[in-house]
Image 1 (cartoon, rainbow, N blue to C red):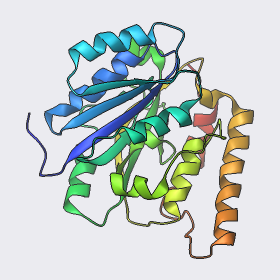
Image 2: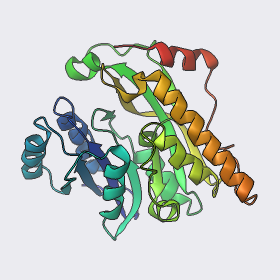
Image 3: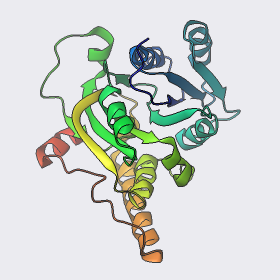
Image 4: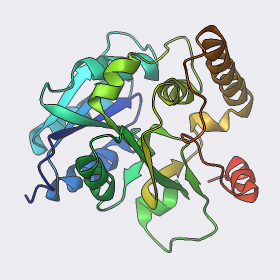
Length: 262
């Protein structure tokens, strides 16, 4: 393995619930990044009722650096991520997230890790994602330019310094939707040291059970996250706004993302 620069370990955190169809491919896509960096893969099984647990046990035998944790009852993605935040190796310097149904592209972390390595002040990087039909990831085929490319709307497009996450603390377990937006808004309030990249680093799998398909609940979660952000800033004027954290993509791309179906 050729390690990129002299940076320390990258920890990739993955919550998983009933992910039997996709989780193997998701984990494999992380493991393939090891050609250029040292990675530990931390997965939390959120009390799945399908074959996710057995798949993870099999993967444990195949992939070095994979660690599996389990919740005793189904508690949601935020609790699963919070458990994983507690399990990060002490020597790890960087943290990334990936959902159990998505796929990293080849060299996904290379440019962002180089930026973090070469710029000690940079606290996080934000790249782009492309939304693709599940069939494309399962069976291959032509990549369509019609599939939306988006920036700054998902944790998996980012790499964070571990020290920044230590300051932010836990995910809000009372939020079933937009908990990732809430988390990133809390980051925006304390840092502007952000590096943006145009590269697509992962494929967001579109399928019938995507949480983002529940538009009503998702919009309510977005509204709550933004309201919480505004209330925190009103209470503490030293907190910053979210300018610099979220870039505005072309309106037509956002509209297409909302109606994009498998």
